Amino acid sequence: MSPITRRMASLGISVLGLLGSRQALAMPQRDPSGLTSAQSGLGWPREASTPAMARDAYLTPTPNVSRGPFYPPAPWGLPFLSARPQRWPEPPGTDLTRGTDPAAAPARGQHITLTGRVLRTDGRPVPQARIEIWSVNADALYRAEDDGVSDPGFTGYGITASNADGAYVFRTIRPPSYTRFLGLIKRTAHIHLLVQPPGGTELTTEAWFADEPKNASDSLLSRITDSSLRQRMIMAGESANPASVPLFRFDIVLA
Ligand SMILES: [Fe+2]
Image (tube, rainbow, N blue to C red; front, side, top):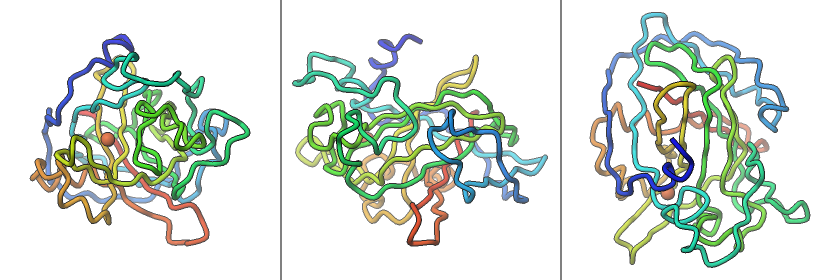
């Protein structure tokens, strides 16, 4: 699918392909390796170790949702709706907190590490999957909306590829919640992800924070009533050290 076609993808908040199981899993610890700093742009966080799956595991696939109107680079994929010149990182990397201007201050807001693995439903890793993320900045604005004017330190968009273990890692911010369309759309804090496995079907989804109070009133989350599907879209927070950058893990399971 071409970039233009992808940008013109459907709007709305429909949830598709909702297959799954509620089977509990035994998860022995496993130490991922092989994602180099050159690939990730970040040092691999030691605490990012992701549990391996039991051989007979069946994992609930990650729900596929709309990418929404603010997928980069322009609102609704229509550059003429952007009032200012486009300023996007070239190429987008894995650290969204450094901005496109080397002289700019780091991104405002709480910096976090977002990591996880791309997996099949049987727990096998998916290497070389293209992973894109985007979210609002500390002022609750997408870069497609303001071209980074309100916070030049936040690129708002990142791309990486999963390693041989299916693992990926980004440095970004914990985005705030936001409303749009005179409050008709209420969105809890979330990070958009688009995953393209090699030779497979792309998946668009969102990652949510478990402790976000506005989850209860979110326009999308309130429409997903299946607890296993909701759980698949909620990140696990893992950093107990207040001096370190909080780490959130989000595994992506492809159907
Ligand atoms: Fe959003």
